[in-house]
Length: 510
Image (cartoon, rainbow, N blue to C red; front, side):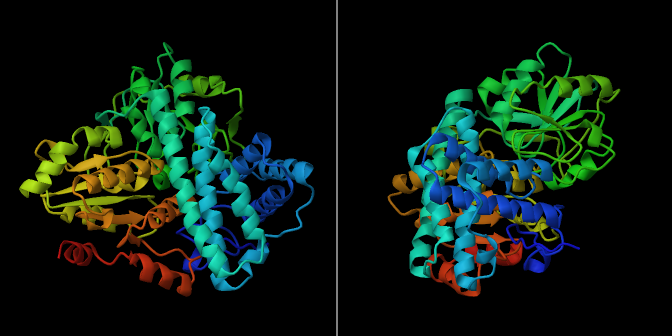
């Protein structure tokens, strides 16, 4: 049996590392190919000129190695070959990072995994024609640093710079999405499925959804979002299509159960794809950087005809089907990006001043299959009625179907969007701190985050770059953070693991 080493995601074996196959479902062969691709990209960053062609190779290559994106060895090998054609065989092996001093390994891992997250956001922005020179140059700088024998004193600032650059990249993507599709507006989304042919679209890419909506006009096919695509219902230029009906199912880790023998077609636009079961493999389609063996891939022409034909062939349900979130609710409210929240900022500020609003929680991040994530459901359920919950990313599926009422007309649960929309939460926090003439850390605001993969890593680094303190992180701490590096984070930023909802609420609210 081939050996591998991977510890880049939260579910990694024994909270130490996967060595004979990934818990995510990738084989040792795929893991080693991804390491080879990473090594090749580092060589490219060291020897190739900084230009748009090479930057795109770096971005797409890094994105391909994010957890649950690409399981297809043939595709990854072709990417390796393309990089070698541009840069020659790699003279750096990423294995040398896994084998080095644990503190150096920890810091380089934070940089590399954060960089992968930035690559995902840069990829989406580029599709819409938006680029940033500082973001693009950083891919070269960071990959070069990973290949060098640098001390902790030089790597620590680069860890925080990774967070700084990710903030720029999230701002860029926010601009790309809102200038292309409009500012999100509060929108109620059903979880029920109408009878007839349908397509489920999952992932993160708004552009792919827009193209599919355009191609399904008048075809008698309904479109349902899944997972991180849920916030798309709030964008004016997407919600104008009448066939965009609602949201199917819950978070990404439940797909093997929820897609089992599904009578509709499924389009994966980005991560997170789980190993596809035979009961629905014939109706799974991938596009962009996502691929899975024996599943039809839609190439750069973005002709979704095969997806449309499969949906028509399967026919959908023969009658309307009632489906709910994990708490039994069948209506999800989305669209509370920074533009919407700041439009009611005076209400928020007055509610705080009057005492009607005592505290704001940001409860968000990635969902996952590991036991213990019901913490986030219980935490939100137990928050007092005079508190607000901001949320984003797929972790919200643990509680986004709850009806917790409102405070002075403001819903107590405010869905701010996808993981990259952490930018919205940051922007709101900064504006509130200005209004109250205090620092963000002095606001009645607490961050309770869940993490799973590398996009969560870059968001965490952004929060640290901004000096945000007292973050509670779960369900477990990253395996790639060494005890010494963890102590630095604890001492400097007061970061802490989650305990129980009761203990954490008592500590936060005093």
